[in-house]
Image 1 (cartoon, one colour):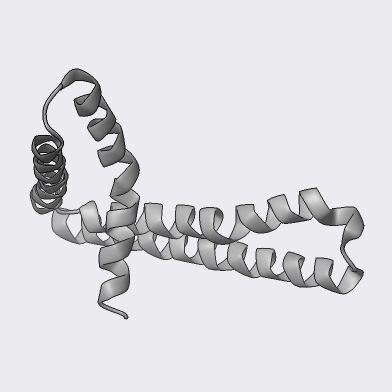
Image 2 (tube, helix red, strand yellow):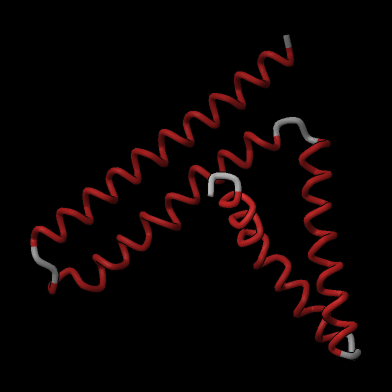
Length: 132
């Protein structure tokens, strides 16, 4: 699972980009479904290849991805869902449930800030060591 999770996460994060490109292709291209499926597969592979090439060209790409991942993943997967749930169901929730959700939010905030700090520190350290 440790190996598979980043691969699936990467594919899921690329999905909005590739879906938008597919919609544009489908609107402007009147072809058979098999050809459109082939174009879609080729386009998804090209997007993935471009990102792989981009990450090899820019040496600090891994730290930028870590920064975005640490800050946005916690926000999207933990903090915002909890906040929205509390906003919607606050009057109906018992005090214990509210406290549990607020504790999760605080822990998520700590993890997100720590991850962001570590990735930014790694970027600065890598940049400083390559400059010297």
